Length: 342
Image 1 (tube, rainbow, N blue to C red):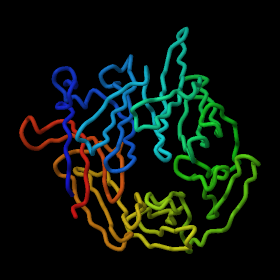
Image 2 (image 1 turned 180 degrees about the vertical axis):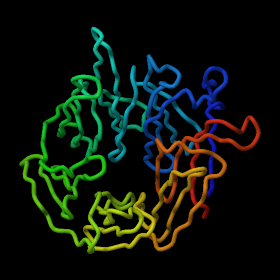
Image 3 (image 1 turned 120 degrees about the horizontal axis):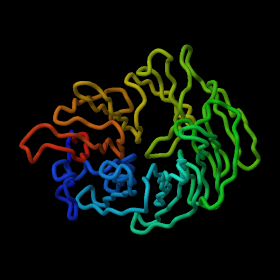
Image 4 (image 1 turned 90 degrees about the vertical axis):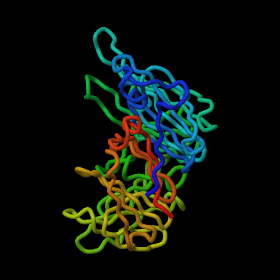
């Protein structure tokens, strides 16, 4: 692997945390989201430095980490983001205490110029998560109304006006989960996998329909639905209950089976890659021929934080790590970008 190591102590305007820990340690990032290998964002807050009064933080780079720009959208944290085309949606979540009671509020923002400017779309007295947009106007999300700390009601809603208004919908199927098992097929139809079948749900007509039974081999079951990061083609993973390493990728539109022996990872054309958390060292695996052969490399120069991790085209991986080798100046918390050597 080739590794690019980025030291936030050297970013203009940054400073160490408590005069001792590295500048990057001031922040708690919830997501590393990429548009391509050069354009990426770190979404979170300064909650490590200000746990009782955190401010949202968005760090962006448009040039593969050569330069960075930091902004805030207000009190709280950026809990997650979602790219659709060049539009980046993010959720700002805050927790306030009113008359001794804890209350969650959320705001949805959009940037159409890679974080140069931000527009607040709407505010909610709920937690908003699992945002999944098909276009600038059409998307779905999960809304959670907290009754008391950690308890409340969750429901799914969709929008056709870019998030200004949301309409409740209910899918009577326990396998529906927009974070791991859902994708838009058209601007009004979503697909998900249930009981080895491809299921569609029409957001407008509320029709729930079994599109077809999937050709799942004996002893396996169909799990998540995902898409090729390069082509957008929908993919399902067929696996075993007692072995999540062996199985098949199934390309739904092409009726193509691809045997894999090292689990289901990020797919970009013929590239497959995945991070494996382990002790004492985590590792990175990649295949350039859809899982026929694999390469693996132990990460022996740093300890990565498994959350958050970002991926981009052709095997790029973005992580926050603890460097423990080299001189005192070389050790500490860093952002690293890895890529299989060509």
